[in-house]
Amino acid sequence: MEIILEYTYTGSIKQESLTENNIIETFFAADYFQLSGLQDFIMKTFKNFLRNNNIENLPELLSKVAETMPLMEDNNFLNLLIESVATIPLNTIEFGRLSIAGLQYLLYYTYEKEKPFVTPEYEVFRYSAILAAKQVSNDAFKSLIKKLPALEQLKQIVQVKNKFIIDHQKVAKELEPLFNEADYVWDQSALCASENFDYEIFAGYQPTGWVLSSNGYCWNSNKSLADYCPRFGDQVSGWNNLPSKLYPVVSLGYPGRFQIQPYQDYA
Image (tube, rainbow, N blue to C red; front, side, top):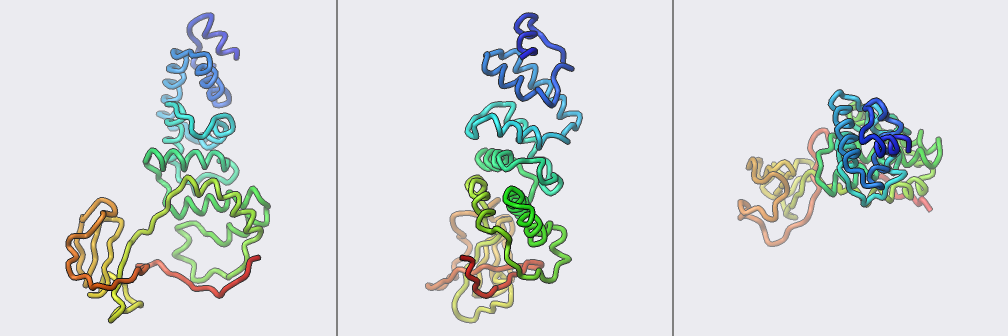
């Protein structure tokens, strides 16, 4: 409030008056009192702050914003803050620095506004799940840390021992708000015929398998068509040899793998 009074009486403030501890409250106060000149000054100061690579405390700033600002609110300061946080890989942010509400803001704005997000989808899921577990209990947190290794560690893992996830129902409840903000898609969409299909081989290598990858490649009979589309298209006009009966199939390429586990009653 002192900064607001200073600006009201003098028409200016010193740049050093703005710190990481008060810049958010000052911006929202300037917005409330309709001090557009002060808002512009804060935005300029914040941009200089980012230009000097002062991004270490941005997760905490976003968490602070999430405590005081409605999710649907939209302003330039929030957009700039989220765009900056989105350039930080989630696996480099220690658990506890970014709150669940802050993560929800991040997922909402990057998805709804189609902003670039440097973190791969698996790492987003991993971070979200572990962060949710941390809110439930320390045991649940430790359990998911072991069950969900970082992406670069997956290549070194042969088998993860099958154990129950501690407090899994409570963790799932914590995750519900985040699922509403994220949209996960398969890397590949595939079809196969029921006859002469080898389930041990990549579907796109076979004459009875047709694969459209998210990178825009089409596969059939070990032949690929590059740059069909930037993302999934509505139809593949190049496939004129499809049989009358088709079945959906999920195809994994190296180093992908899957495991079918026995039924377990978690009730």
